[in-house]
Structure formats: structure tokens, C-alpha cells
Image (tube, rainbow, N blue to C red):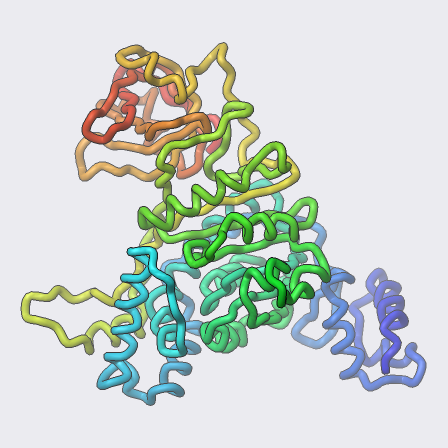
Length: 481
């Protein structure tokens, strides 16, 4: 039995002197344990000691500077992950996994999952379904998480040592995206909660991560992991608080997503974040927003960090809440091309049923420390509340708004969904004439805060929504990019 305290004390002394060599440390420990035992002990203690392991096997301190946005804009799923997934498919079905009965089974599993998600049915995963899910969703979920992490990194809120809990980790898209988003010198104590056979796929894909991304897979339910059931595995969340609790495309599958997210908030470190992702389709995106609104409460000390900022103190939105971001498409991965080309189709069918390279996602980040992506608030002396839009129909008003969509038009006047945290009905900014003074509306990113001066409020009976017209008389300033 190695003296862990002695290893820690020696490492803490040497960290200020030179790289920590396990062989050197072993000479200071009673009984002179084998260097391999010392190395494993250092790995186990590295997170708490803020040490990272180098390729040569020595350990050095982790940089104290927070993670900065790395310019995340992947154009494809990295080959290492694509090859690892195909290795699993070949091991399960053989080299021609995409044809014959195995290809038919995978395609049927993908179709069934898409239908179940669309109609809100209970989703069941066996091994084939898990592999089909990976074929269809691994690339876009990998890409999406990095764009959300940008919201935290731009304000210096991602440390280089992170304890992460990934609830409903699935086959690992968010986990791999997190790994690649972080700098090479980050140290991650990663815990995945995944009860289904998707955990086997996750386990194989996590083998492609670096030595300082240290995974533990808990094959249990979210409810059990958070101690919400009689047979709870409380050790998952009781050992230490987490810097990041991720709910990646899982909320729609939970019986009580509000209770589970509230438990995730309780598991946070004081400066930690809950990050929830959902597909962009209407039901799952609105479901995420409903959960956000049920959990975020000043009385409970939980605030929305992004994207749906509450710009009016004490206000809570009650509109439909269908809001999602859209980023650049990914290159078609070879496993999607193979399974699509081998599909049996009627002559009138279009190819591409099993292509999924769109990066479209809804998300929410919650925190308990009062931090917000943009510390901006509206005031009645300068702005009208969207909650009071009915009183301003046909009037020109000033608004402070969060941009909550890309252009939703089909080539006509650009249309953008917006909110200010008070809206009870959907609101859109409609640009009928772009000028130098209002082009900031088009240029603003998703989640940006804009000040609209002299916008014309109209009621759209067809959409049962308010349109605020941005025209030659309107000025739009980007208050927070």
C-alpha cells in the first residue's frame, strides 16, 4: 500500500522546482514503491494537485489561465473518431456492415429513433440502436457542444482543470467535442452517466482521448446518479462538486427533467455551470426551454447565463420558446455515405435519408453565481417591454432584445426571433430595409444583445406574433456581441 500523502507532499514540493518524475519520487517514499505505482497514484491525484501528465511520463503544473475560445468551427468529425466507430461496426457485423441484414437493421433502428424523437415516444436502446444512433448523430452532437462552450470561455469561465458530469452521455458526441475544444494542457475528471448499451460505444470512443482526459462511466440512470431513487448510486454526485454538468440531448427522454436538472444544479461547484443541449426540432427545443424556465428562479438562486437572458429584473418569459442556433454543415462522414448508398429505395426516393451533417441545436446554460454572458439590463426610461407590446401596436418604440435565431425567412425580408425575458408572445424583428445604421441586426451573432431604436410594432395575425419592423428609420446597435 503506497503512502498517498507522502506522494502528494513530495509532488507539491517538486512542482516548484522541476517536472515531477515518478521514478525520482519513489526514492522519497518509504518502501521505495515501483515507479509505475507512483505514476498511477499521481494520475489519481493529478486533478486535485492541478498536475498534467506529459508524453514523457513526467507531471507538470496546469496553467492557471482560464480556457480561451479556440476558434471552434469543425468542418468534419475527426478521422480518429470516425475510424473508431467503424471499428465497432466491423467488429459487430463484419466488413460489409452497411449491406445485407445488418445494414437493414441499422437503417431501421435509425428510422425508429427519428420517429420516436419526433413524436416524443419513449426511446429504447439496444446495441444495434446505439450503433445506429452513433452513425446518425455522433458528428452533429460533437460539433454543437463546442459552440456552446464558447459562451463560457469568452468570459474566462472554463478552468483548465474541470470535473465534468455528463448525464445521459449516450455514444459520446458531447464528450468528444468537449475533449477537442479544451487545450492540450487541460486536465478533465470526466464522469459519464449512461445506463444503456450506448455506454459500450462511448467506452470505445473515449479510448481515443488523451491521457489527461480521465473518464469514468457510471452505468446507471440519471435519477439514480443524483440520488432520486430508492436504489440510488449516490457516490456519483456525492464525492465532489462538478464544474460542468452536461445534459446532452437527454432531457426529452426523462420522466421528470425538471427534478433531474435541479439535482444537477445542486451538484455544481459554486462557480459551475449546467449546460443543456437539445435537437433544434420544435418539441425537443421547446421542452428544453420549459425545463429552463421551471429551474431558473431568483428565489432558488439559479439564473440563465445564456442564451435567453432576462433583460428585465424579475421578468420571466412565457412565449413558445422555440429558439435554436444554426452553424456550418459538416462534411459527410464515410459511415453515413456507406449506409445511405446501400439503402433499398423506390425509384422516386431521394438519396440522403441517412445523411445528418446539419449543426442545429437548442441550448441553455444555468449558473448559481449570478454570472451572465452579458451583464446588460433594460430600463423603462429607454425601452419598452415586450410584455407590453399590445399597447404599442402601430407605434415606434425602443427595445433591448436578445437575438434568438438566424434568419428565418425563405429569401424575402430577413426575420429574426428575439426576446427580452418578459415576452408572453413570440416576437420577431423583420428588416424591410437594411441601412448602415441597422445592419448590426444581420451581423449580430445568435445570443447577442441588440438595442433597437425606433422599431415599428405590428401584430401578425397569421403567426399570432408581434413583428417589429426594422426599416430606414430604425437604428440597431449591438450592445453585447
